[in-house]
Length: 279
Image (cartoon, rainbow, N blue to C red; front, side, top):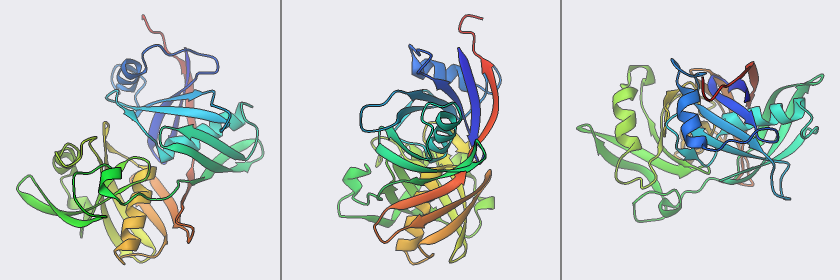
């Protein structure tokens, strides 16, 4: 089975063309192929598939632990690059079906190559029951959450998948590998959550580290950057258009007056190969 390794600012996945291949057990394949010692090595697995009549293509995304996620902002840009460059959908305005709904992409090209994309990530969902998060009320903004003997002020939002955002003075000093899984698996989150710790540099510039649900710390998270941007704006910490620095690079996030969040970032092909199931 042929695969392509791609990344969006360091958030790397193995992509399989399911127009040409059949994957029988995607969760198991995700666990095996993502192993950085015995597999290809990645944050997860993405299947590029035929879509219904409402979209050009469909994507399914599985974390490195085999769990399926609703959406991935960095992966969807790479899906756009893949289908454009291989002629599956040769147009710059693309629609991609996900478990979080259909997302629309504008591809940035140089010649016949896609260098990145702007993705309409939809509207943020603030209602705790829709995130989902176990909390009464219409929002969860700076709610104290006790983990590891410390209290963190978390703000929760869904960008098609759940996020818990906390602002700190220095994200570099944060023990993310200890705190991240405690928040991810906290009982208040029935479907677990992605965890973002952010630092405000100025009103238009943020830094962020992410603990991804089902994958651990990754170099970037597109939906997490969107969640961090809208929370920062809502709390008055930042403007509605910001640049976010992550370990793997930068994303530009714009929260429009139409309530839609638009994310712009790169998409890079790394290498192609063949996966032999029974080797």
